[in-house]
Image (tube, rainbow, N blue to C red; front, side, top):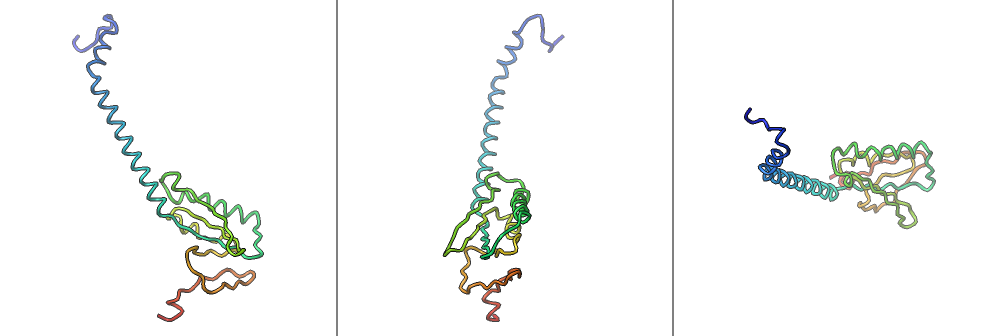
Length: 162
């Protein structure tokens, strides 16, 4: 029969088949490496773009801030949902960075995360915590009433009637 290898001939037919197709195997390997490198370049570029466009939110607690364990659990669960909100992205671009700092003896808790999760990061879980923009200038000192939720600041255009 033509085209059927003779098993009784030994492994010579296998050696001949490998020698005849070695250039195709080499071309396939080179192609696979090129595709892998292109996908890897795209993935790293996507991570760099996502890391350059991040949202920063500052949480400023009141003087008597004392959260309950339920509030802390709710806050941790909200931060754990950030990767689900972002979707399919590099792991390092989905991370949420927490920074604690003190300015003029006032504690500031900053959350930095992906811009796709900005709404989730700006949610207020604690009753005695103000969510503020860390880059906005606050010329007027904030007044805080015990037990009252914070109000949104009106813009200067709304105050002047423009």
